[in-house]
Structure formats: C-alpha cells, structure tokens
Image 1 (tube, rainbow, N blue to C red):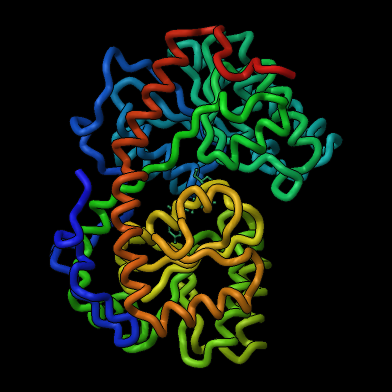
Image 2 (cartoon, helix red, strand yellow; image 1 turned 30 degrees about the vertical axis):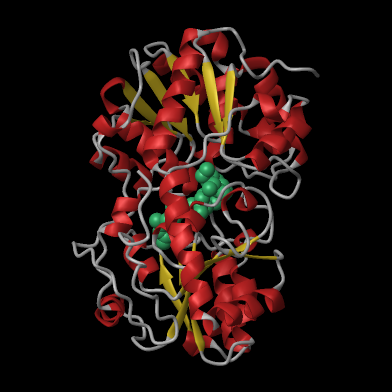
Length: 442
Ligand code: UDP
Ligand code: GLC
C-alpha cells in the first residue's frame, strides 16, 4: 500500500535550516537490516535449494543485497564466501549457513590484474573451483553474486552440472575493470551462465555491449531497502540523536554514505564543502577494499582546504538509518556511473532530500526536481550550488524528500526485490540448460 502524505513522517515540514525534525514514529534505532518477514513475500511453488557464492567478507552493497536473499532462503540454502569477514558474522546472525572457501593467493587478485598475475594464482584457483563444485552438487542452483564467484562457478560447472544464475551488480566497462577481467567475464557468461539478472538497466546495457546480448532480454531486479528500519528511528529530537552520534547539534549537516574509494567521489564533496562557508560534511563509511591511501588523502585534502573542523569521518557504521536521519541532506557523489546505489534509496527512505550524481543506474531512481536533485558527476561547483539551493529553499527540499519517501517504499521495497529474485531463481531451476537469457545474438 502506498503511504499517504498525511501518514508520512514528513507531513510536518522538514526544517532544513534549524535542524529540528518532527517524526511521529518513536521506536528504538535499528541497523539497516534485511528484516523482511518471510510471510510478506509472495511466491508460488517450491523454493529451489540454492548455493549462494560471494567473493567478499566485507559488507558492500552487493553483500547487503545477498544478505536479504540468503536470510529469506536460509532453510534451503547455504552461502559460500571466498574470503572471511564481517559479512559472514552478519549472515550467521540471520540464521544463514556459511562456508568460507578461502585461498589467500586468489583473494589478492585485483580487478585490474594482468594475465600473468592470473596465471600465478592458478593452483589456488583450481583448489577453490574444486571445493566450490563439491558443495554445489548438493543444491539445485548456483547463485553467483560477484565476478570472482562467477568465474569460479563457471570453471567448475562440468563438475557439478547445475544451472548458474548471476546477479550482476557492476557496470562492465573499462572505468571499473581491467581488459583481462572483462574478457574473462564475457567468456564465463557465454559458456557457463544460464541466467543473468542485473541491478539496473545501466548494468544491463554494459553487459549487452560486452557480450552482444540484447539488453532487454536481461531481467532488471532492483535492490530492495527495508523502509521499516528507517521508520523505527525516532527522529523527533534531532539534537539528542546527533548528541548520541557525537555530531554537532546545531550545524547544517550533509551526509555522504559509502565506502571510501576514489570513484565514490568523497573528494568532490570536500571540494564542494569548501565553497559553502558554514555547512558540515559527515562521511560515513570506511575503505573496505584497501583504499587506505585514499582515506588519508581525504583527511589531507580537508586540512589543505581549511575545512577539517567541518568534516566528520565517522568510519563504518551499522546503524545507517539513525545516521541518515541525523542529516539535513544526503549526498551521492560517484565520479563513475553508479550501477545502482543503495545509499540513494536509503536516503530517500530516511525521508531526507538526496542530491545524486546523474549517471548509471542513478537516473533510474532519481527524477530531477521530483524526488531528488541530480548533478553532473565530478562537478564540485554544481554540487555546492545544489546543496545551496536545497538549503535556502526548505519547501523544495521537503517536497523532494516527501516524494522520495513514497517512491522508495513503492518502487524499491525488500518484498518486491525478494519476489522478483525468487521468480528468477525458480525460472533458472525449472529451465536447466535452457540458457534463458545468455544465448542471444552474438
Ligand atoms: N553502509 C553501511 N555502513 C557504512 C557505509 C555504508 O552499512 O558505514 C551500507 C549502505 O547503507 C549501503 C551499502 O553499504 O547499503 C553500500 O551500497 P551501495 O550500493 O550504495 O554502494 P556499493 O558500496 O555497493 O558500491
Ligand atoms: C554494487 C554497486 C552498487 C549497487 C550494489 C548493489 O556494489 O557498486 O552501485 O548498489 O552493487 O546492487
């Protein structure tokens, strides 16, 4: 059911200048959780037994998407991780069975690795392929959630002979991947994947350009965000919320959520902040995949710009809903096309105005001037101007945030995500060997 405006926490105007938010829903703060009751997700027929595979032990967007699905399917599935980390702990806490099939040499391969490097890790790859294939025999479907999982699943397919479904979370272009990786992905899809599902039309277009598949033959399943986790945050007293988080109570706060990585564009937000005399920037997230040098560069940049006291490095936080509700505006600043961008939908679900970089899947979520504000990627001046516009026009900011809340709940719910994904899993199981959408014109 679509929420009415009156029922929305934004029915009371969002005072963007003086940071006091009125939010009638009072309940304890909760982390972004996958907590969708199984009973609310409609599907018919038997659920396939699924072996999920993900290369990461860290909590990135692809892993949050898998967390929800693995929790929903936990009674008849298992998750294989190719490296250990907090993702395993989160999966296990939700009742998922997890196996870590790790090989240090393979974990080290970078997205831009050369062919020679790939050869060096061959023995480790063979070990992982065999271990994965041995697990896969006990399941109906292999669901690969990342590129390395895709490649290992593809290499061992002759050993387990089960349908392979790939949830493609990335835009497959040279901005994001090395030439070798793209070529390996192309052949893995052509030779071994039965069914591809993508997280946005933008990701589908990149797959089509790489493999020659028709973009419209690939089902788009958008990520789902648990809006109730945001509703549970009591934002009535924004001051005490900020106090609890150690944030300045009376400052005007822009929040940027996501791992610290050059293409996520935190440096653009710092440049924009330097053009805005008294706003503050809160960076929530950590360098998850070895980008520590970039994290240090951001601190140096803030110091060099003379804005260090207005920039708050919060590190990785589990309780994203509370942190988002403590902000006046949510920024998204990726300099390369964002494949989807969970943080954008989360900002919308938090009932905050979102300013996002207009490229990739973002334009499938944000409609400029309707449910958010789009800016040119990498343009600090445009970002500063957009922040200034929303700050000086609270009525506009409130209108955008209201529509955003409605759209997040209607278009990007966890229920819809799970229903769509289970349909795709069932289709992959019912048509084994059919190669449903991976055999189009070449
Ligand atoms: N996130 C989090 N804590 C943090 C920073 C980010 O839990 O400190 C979550 C965020 O809420 C989102 C995910 O990490 O669900 C990032 O996903 P997104 O699709 O935005 O980007 P990705 O990192 O996958 O490219
Ligand atoms: C990837 C993408 C991100 C997307 C997430 C979930 O990590 O970078 O844009 O939101 O997957 O699909």
